[in-house]
Length: 109
Length: 115
Image (cartoon, rainbow over all chains, first blue to last red; front, side, top):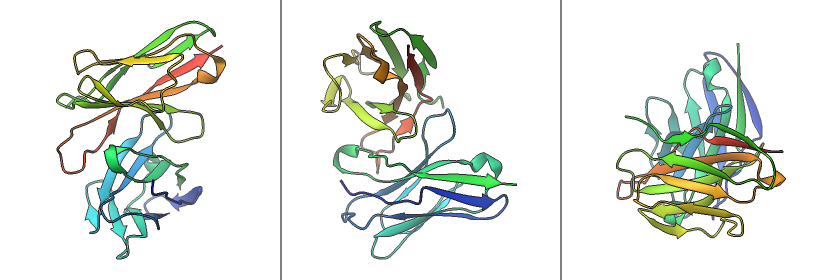
């Protein structure tokens, strides 16, 4: 399974952009990068996914490097409600999600 | 559209007692997953169903854990007997195969405490 590496924690000021990095240097050509987040006492929430191209939806933007070995999740205007654990996952064959420890994002006022 | 529904949300039992968790997936999603999440860690897959068939149960401790999805919709995960180490959050997720990337959507989980 392709593994991901994320910083254990990050802080962000409310209203500023939160940029969460992820390394996935062993990713294969047909494997997607997924991002989920988990707010305290809730189940993981799907945010966004991508293969090669940058992606944007109502929640976030995903920037994937050209060699696909790393990506960055961008929350353009972080709010206190974005405080959560963010998981970067490379989805394997059989639709298996292998979660790591994730990044704890703390948004501060 | 309703999301994945799980019940109960919380359960406290004494060790050696049985316990069951119920999951109702998103309507039309025929793939269902059960995950285990220990405190401070990411979720780990226990079992995956395609309709009624368990297609990946390699991580399910079969001596005490069992699961079923009789009509290909709702599912039940059971532990009998429960041990102290089973205290965790049990998450259910569902997805729609055949969609471009088969995204999994999670329920709120059941927090189990074994005393």
